[in-house]
Amino acid sequence: MMRLALVTETFPPEINGVAMTFGVIVRELAARGHEITVYRPRRKDLLPASEHPGYMEAALPGMPLPGYPLMRLGLPAGGALRRRWRERRPDLVHVVTEGPLGMSAVGAARSLAIPVSSSFHTNFHSYTRHYRIGPLRGLALAWLRRVHNRTARTFAPTRELCDELAALGFRNLAVLSRGVDTRLFDPALRSGELRGAWGAAPADPVVIHTGRLAAEKNFALLMRAFAAMRAANPRCRFVIVGDGPLRGRLQAENPWCVFTGFLPRAELARHYASADIYIHASLTETFGNVLTEALASGLAVAGFDYAAARQFVRDGESGLVAPCDRPRALVEAAVRLASEPELRSRLRARARPAVAAHAWHKVIDRFEDDLRAVAGMPARAAEPSPDAGANAFARQIDGRAASRILS
Image 1 (tube, rainbow, N blue to C red):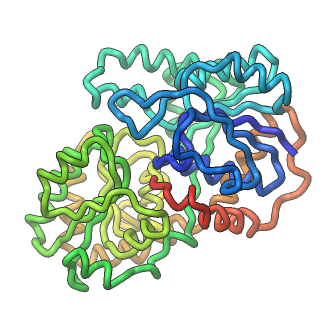
Image 2 (cartoon, rainbow, N blue to C red):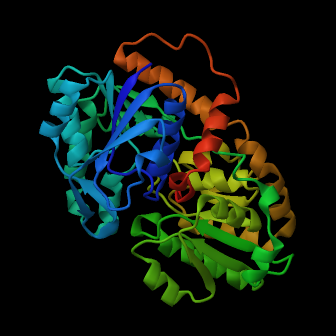
């Protein structure tokens, strides 16, 4: 049994890929018998302990993230963390996010000689150009490097990103990939009734996009691709799932799109399965959970050749990929999916097999071993049952927290 302190500024019921990922990881590690406390900024809508059995939450001071009130920024809490960890010493501190709370947690752990690891999930240094603070990129990168290099190991979602970070001076890197729940995301959930509500006939292509409606998601290019698809095939229908700072403007400028807002997890899976095409225009993702969810749901996907698309999509076989420096190529790929039904059908048939073997329990097996190594603990005595992780994940999906997560 490992006693783990996990420090993060985002966690269910917040809605983003990092919250989803660590919601799954915490519930699975708790189901394996580990003692876990999640340290996070205080929110009014935190779930009572009875709704997340198996682990504990400790609320710390925080504030809304400037310009993005849906997210909370943790404040430095080194003193409070040291007091708690002196009383009940963890075997390992894992820092998920690199804000003031995460930085103070690294310092507190080091002062108590507690092993500490970290995760790199969000390209904050790349976000600066989307929020008109490009000159701060160097400072953001220096901050991130300092936080992570003070930990024994930094986990990133892909080997590609590890190599990029190493070139930028980050040390002690390892891969923590992302899993996909193929039990939840399933083409069998396709709903003719839902498609009818979107105004789509059985043969009409439905294009879906899910995620935060925020500047860093490259919505300018995405909407350009949507417009080109609509011009090539007026029968296309467009559905945008999610919320964020750009929703009002996007909805006003694109009244021909269906905007659903955030959806419960099971309903999100039904929306994926009822669509036909997924276009992923973002270039700031460290992984891109939404793309693997779309593949598992049997959609024909197009995206840039990096992160999840590079790992799972074979161009022309299980989807279409475009060079990262050629946005026009992504638009052209999107138009092909809209106007070539045989291509669309072939890619949809091969989408789900591309991610079928990437189960969450296998990802967490490797992560658990890595955490034990950082903590100086022996490896697991035996491999868990192949279905153990999947069953634990299925249990957490039934909870209210998991039902509100959107990648």
